[in-house]
Length: 364
Length: 252
Image (cartoon, rainbow over all chains, first blue to last red; front, top):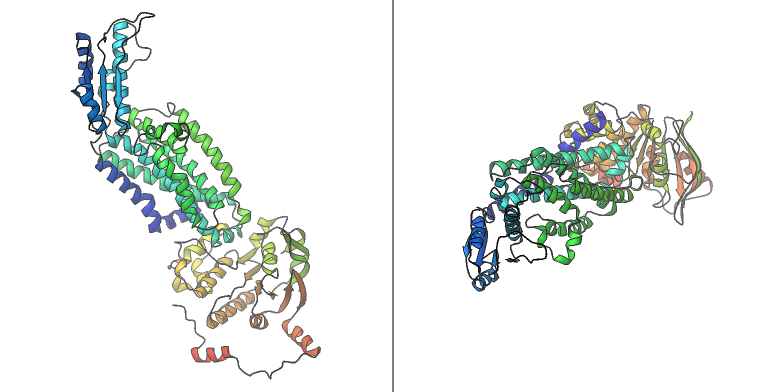
């Protein structure tokens, strides 16, 4: 134990001296956060919603009024044709068409309910997804009120009103996830392939040091770097971008580290498989790039084409980002995100099998 | 003198290649033993089996009373190792590199004293990757000495070094033997074996084809009627080179 700890400290010191490694594990993530955080700061501020109220009755007006009360929505009244034109020019996020037969009345069995048509801007999936949930929420509320039933789940009013989801709020958990992935995969794969090729690992294995002690030191070094990375980014998010992770800092850190462990296993598998460091970037990019775009880092994972969504929804980073985002944005607890954590666990098991298969000390 | 390394009927295959074909030899305590042979003769494989880095397919290798294949970890504690490609983790200074290896053996050392022993005290704070080839070989020997080994294995220690650095390393190896450590080295430089080794074994195609003190082997060859086609020069080009450039190390 003492040996592993001292080995970790030695490797950590060396890691912090390596300017390239520090640049990629601390500076680049911060740049990503600063650039994307400020570039789009406020861009999400509101969801622009056009309403074509073809009914124009007391009922429809009260429905529209309910929507207008919500800060997140910027509501304007437009005819469906004009609004569709704006949607096509991506000047508008959403359009609601309230049909002539719109009414707010108790539902009766067998009687059709009015259908509101909602159009969304494909180019702005996060806005559409947020706007859609707000509209749904309002409809649900109206239904409860009219049908005189108590909601199965109670939701506080300010939860809807309070969703002032800015882009940076959406961005921060994604940035945490993607950078933990990059750090874990690249730092292990590069460093250990170089050490393997140059005979460093072989030299260390010529000492009585147990491979597990060496591995623990390598893993803990990266976990400390990941902790440092997450805390620095959260500090910037909180103090510079005024992001308030609702679920707290500690759960975010714990889930990030869980993700780091998962991606470390992939890093080790890669380091074991690759013969030279030249092979690392290609394979690492192949692994990370799809997740960069399809796992909900900079934009919603729903932006992925529908036919690959069943796959992209199962990517390791998707599980990680979803868990982080639910904790950060919705205030979820670790128990609430147990589904995603289970997904991470399955991937960790897969990664571990690959690492054990490819990262063999007796072959160095 | 007693044997500190004892090898009997050692075998090693790599697929179809029979790299080591049942060799047997002993290394005596306190000697400098050289394993000679062309590239691919099986020298490195033999040494790596003795170091506990490779498993033999057959035969026995005993180092300081320990059966290496049965207790590799215990054997590793008793030997010092310099591999053919000596490389260390980056961003460690020379002193930290020594400390790293001491930690790997679970021992504490006076790193500065060890560096002084290999003439690297003034480079203690320098990153090891910035050292010259000869300096790195000496650092490599320092790391091989952290556990006060009973046997020091040096695999082609002077390959790639300039004449000054080679001679400097020979002095270092003699000093280590003087302090009681048995030295087992491989080389394909015959001059090095001749001046440094008490006994040599010549290995080719996985077999040991001769084993004796260098002088004995030379005398035996002459006894078989061998003569060089030319009269031997009293000096070589290397002598000229050293005369012109001096014996001091040039490594900065």
